[in-house]
Amino acid sequence: MDSLTMKNALQEYVDAFNANDIDRLMALFSDEVSVEDPFSSPAKIGRKEVEAFYNESMSGANLELLAAPRGSYSNAAAITFAVHTEKEGHPVRIDVTDVMTFDSEGKIATMHAYWGPDDIQQL
Image 1 (cartoon, rainbow, N blue to C red):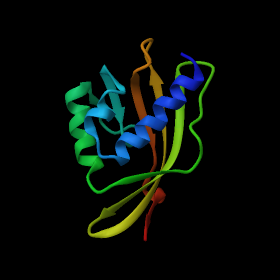
Image 2 (image 1 turned 180 degrees about the vertical axis):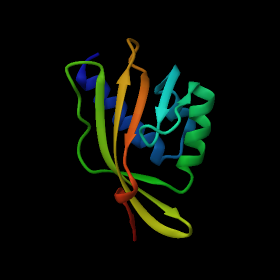
Image 3 (image 1 turned 90 degrees about the vertical axis):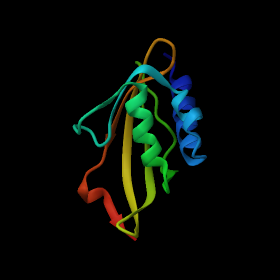
Image 4 (image 1 turned 135 degrees about the vertical axis):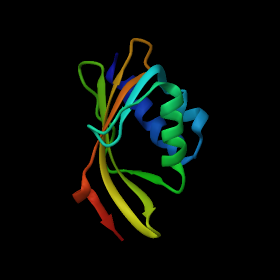
């Protein structure tokens, strides 16, 4: 997997999320995808669970890239962004780094979102 392909996929991930286009977003994932958001929470496994997760996550949220996507010499890449959304009726910002691995077909196989309670700021 080349770094540029992974970086382009991560930019498309942000663009599809911000367009609230679930079909476009899901096209990026493998059939056996596993998502942990936040990392170490129960994994959403397979397209059905992952699609349900993103349908809920995308509602009223917007991603702001804080740095360009980062590639690797292997099959993983990362993005760092702020999620702008609402929690309990108040605007919040959640700072997140997603690390994704890719399968041999260039599809996202795993996504681990790194953020914790101290990464949530009430605005």
